[in-house]
Image (cartoon, rainbow over all chains, first blue to last red):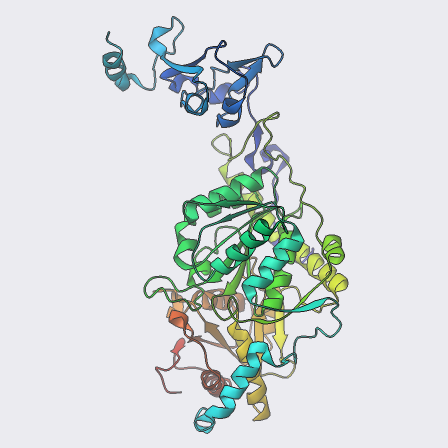
Amino acid sequence: MKERYKKYIVEIPEEMSIPYAGIVESPKVNGEQPMMLTGGWRIYRPVVDHDKCVMCKSCVLACPDATVLLVDGGQKIGFNLDYCKGCGLCTWVCPVNAIDRVPEIDFEDGVPFQDALFLLPHVEALYAD
Amino acid sequence: MAEQYKDKKEEILKETVKMTGYEDAGFDWKSEKRVGATKFLTGLGAVAHALKMADIDVASSYPIRPYTGAMMMLSQMAARGELDVEFVHGEGEHGQLGIAHGASAAGARAFTGSSGVGVMYAMEVYSPISGGRCPVQMLIGNRTLDPPGDFGSEHTDALSTRDQCWIMGWAHTPQEAFDNTLMYYRIGEDPRVYLPQMNCQDGYFITHIPMKVVVPTQEKVDKFLPPLSFPDALDPLNPLGHGPQLFPGQGHVLEATRVNAMMGAFPVIDEVVQSFNSIFETNYSPFVDLYRCEDAEYVLFISGGHAYTAKFAINHMREKGMKIGLVRPRFIRPWATDVLADILSKFKAIGVVETNNAFGAARQAGILTLEVATTLYQIPNKPVLTAFMGGLGGEVIRLDEFYYMGDVLAKAAKEGKTERTAYWIGFHNI
């Protein structure tokens, strides 16, 4: 039986092999997968208010890219800003409104909007005063 | 032959009543040896019972008849506390399949189901589920697509999704629906396969007509179906990127691995069906159900619930001396090309009974004709091939219509040709 159906199987050479079903580990350390940095897409940066945070970890589960990290030995919430796209889901799910969305242009090391230059006037108008 | 039965309506009616299972029909259903409680179940009831015994973890639902029966029974089981299941109601079929996808990716044994237009509305999600190699099981109670959207069975809804890398097959009795549910989970959850499965049954004819079902003991089911172990399940402490995170240029490799999973399912199906037969004392053949084919010259090729009626019709035609048989594929995906080519090469004429429509396709018949014609391509002396368009719009295929098919095939086998690539039942003379 097995022999008979062998002709339908595609032999994949070792050098072409890929992870099972394309499943890869989410990046845990910054710069782990340099070809897939998505932090440059971000317009708003998530900033957590540690006084308000109750460590419910809803944001850890909600983040589609696993960029919400547990830092300080699991005592605090932190963000992997190399991969955070700034989608805002963490802000949305936070039950105590501890995560704020701050425009990237307010930061000295803010990402330079390379992919979203057309949005700059809009963002600046929003935060004019 | 159809003429002879014109004034025998009473007898045909009697036969039809017998067919529903109210009297013991078991001439082909060798269940004498089967041990277990005999219940009187519809196809949906049988599947719900099987799901309970398979101990599913997550069920997602959205109502559309005829599938709704299974959803109702599962929710009742959950409400009564008989089944420990996370029962999630979707906002539509698209969301429903998404829920099943997520549940399965998290390592749960997931179940979902739909019918007709609902199957089509979820179309986008089929490929991500099979691409993510999530062994979700989906029950499809076939329903005619709009128009006319009839409650009765037409296979076009499920067959339209045939190329999305889901294992797919039809049950032709509630008992087979019960058994398929267990078998499909075992096939789909095999580490060599890990693919989702479509457990199809004809709307109304199987989903809503009760028949005898032998429900085995829980110990036997546990022996047959081990708990699911899914690699790379979602885990917040060990985050993974599901949904291919690949470099450009790896896409074709990903497709090749999915092909290998589907075609690698052949030996697995063989093993699983043999294992099922030995544990539950049944006699399923893995890929093809043959009925009175030993000395047959021409056969009906038919998938799904109408095969049950066809078996009675074939008995009657055999009494008249016609050398007719029946070939019923148990799996549409993966399509058992070599097994079917061996079997079909023995006959002079083949009539594919289509309960689906493929508008504008080669030979202008249905989808099964395309598959059968391709299968026959590798045979040197090809049998005559024609199709019968019946059961469209959810209509019943009556016994006299099967006699008509028998007459067409007898003529085709004798003359070595047919006039038409597809005979529409009730439209053409022989």
